Image 1 (cartoon, one colour):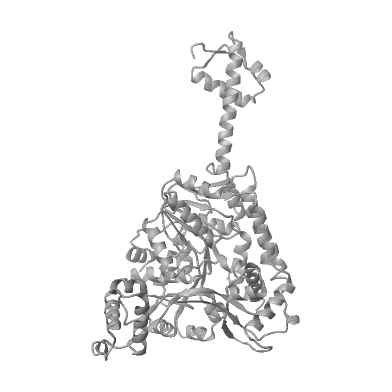
Image 2: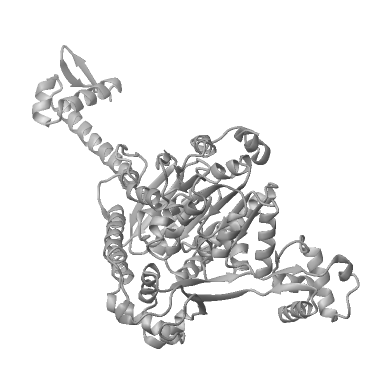
Length: 634
């Protein structure tokens, strides 16, 4: 089938969006390709269609587990074979996914960059036919690879395993420097780069200075309609703002990484269906969200960079209709952003001291700990040693870049079950408690696919449906696990420290210039660009964004707050000029030569001619033999 046939069969579209077909054809021709497409531009199609056209498996490296699961679920709904491998899966789930992969049961394989460090995984990849390597959200290589996901810099290792396979890198946010860095880090050979303008003609960028931001949010929402997102940088503030909006009669809920996965999913689905109007969220919300009718995106706090701002702003107006992106600023915001720079790069001595204390806290002796994975309570550690959480995290990220340890953020793993006995055995079970039998019967009614793979469950739903409390549901699931009826993986949440190397003496810890000074300079530049956007006067907002992303030939958008103020100011100025002309004409009712008008009123000739033409056309003034005079009845 041709790419268009595939698009029609699985997605129901007759034609591609701009650049999609160009990227697909480049990939199918075996060329290393990079696609720079704004948020909502349809990046996924550019690798999912080739994946179905090519004979083997397409490996997709993507940053977030939620993104993997969403894309795999969406593909399965379209009857496209896809699997993912991530840290939230247990051994049995991993085995099932690998079996599908080995037996031709998958056309797309989604993995995190960390998975590429696993030698066993790499060996397994060698045994299957890989036809394409895709790096989704490729800006993370440059943005996160140096900051807190060093595994992003290891993606190029796949090139050594599959030297003749084309690589496709996709992103919605890349400055010229980041673009160059992506091409370098992925070792792309004679890459073909397709670039769409970062301009979004339906977005109106607005910056509002206010010391009462929460009231300004209500003011904006009360004068607009449609779905909205309010971005903040604090988990606590998400709830405060959502509660305030709800008390003011605005339908709102909140979302952040600390919530249970089931709650996050429930709230996200409710918002996407239109059951709630406003989502107040941290930046944990949004990547992979495809809701076309978001009319307003408000930033309560300034993001740390224009990359993040543009990415989050881009969630508005994906349906092409007029939408608004509002950044709220206060006098303190620039200082807050600049302080983050110093917090992100603590002194080297402090970084070394944190390394030593982490090792002691986890009982890792000198020259021990190689490839050890240890549960790590960051909050407790900071409490014991009196560290500010943000500075401690920053030190751990810098140590990760230097190769001494990795801090794996706490991620919640949802509860899931899989029936591990046969259907025949299920109907001839030995004695189970009444509660367990009730729970088993309800699970079989509520969920499908239980015999083939792990299925996510929600104990609260089962409790509600069975009229049992959650504790009895939990105990029943454990009982069935002991009876080998099913495999039950309860939900859990815990961060870890991984030691890729043995513990080093503190004096030998090296944080190189490329890790510290060079990244510090990059962060300072990003911060100042964000500050300029929020506080610089008289510059078109969209033009500033476009110039930041390398589009230097852009024009003023005419839609942002700066352009609108300029138009309004110009209109007011014109009104003042017209009033002056009319007052002058009334003082000379017998008429006046245009040169006299120009001399006495001091209006540029071109403007004066235009104003006089307007006044004559509208009947306010007349012209006879080169002399202008007022029309008395107007």
